[in-house]
Image (cartoon, rainbow, N blue to C red; front, side, top):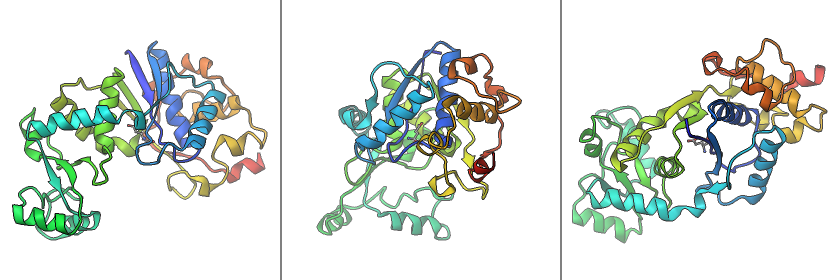
Length: 297
Ligand code: GLU
């Protein structure tokens, strides 16, 4: 393996769920003596410099170092535009004027769409008159990948997902594929909330002539209510936990235990963890973290 990455959205500070995924990604890279890059997926959040600085600080505090410069998607829009243009020029795309609501409603209609939630291809064959009508109404189109593009290239089939949003911003699936290829990422470790995006990304890699990295999707961390961990659950980030007196090694110890590396939640450093980590031992179920437990310890 040559290079891995952690690609958070700078939408706030990292919580234990994000940190756990970052730790796993860092460990896979370090066990394989691969590079490990940090990339901010800031296309939809805006630059958010404070959140970025906090996230860099948190990762550094845990010893989850990264190689090279931090990259930001907002600096790389020309790369995304070039990839989109390639697909457009090959006739693999079409404009879509549907609003989110229209997509939702059409997908829910009987006989409407194929797979649940997939785009029902309403705009695949718009007449000139229909296009003009949308334009008169001031609608701007998103750009979708034409389904037949997938069938023609290795039989991968996904719905006609968005490549460029109506506001002109490259969609996540497109941007992440371009970035992973451009940075030579050959293994991706990320949260399993993204597992469903993977076929779309693999299809784009085929179409754009990129190689496909290996993928490892790590189960999420949930609160005691079974919901995905968030601030609402209490002290879930380093900004809360460090002032409570927990050390970075203690926190890494919880994460190491949760990743199946240790029998008990004993403090550990990131470097020490490299020797005991094994992908095979990561539990398949979400890890339940209960911040209310902290007070009584
Ligand atoms: N930005 C995504 C997230 O924060 C991760 C994307 C990826 O790893 O492909 O969940």
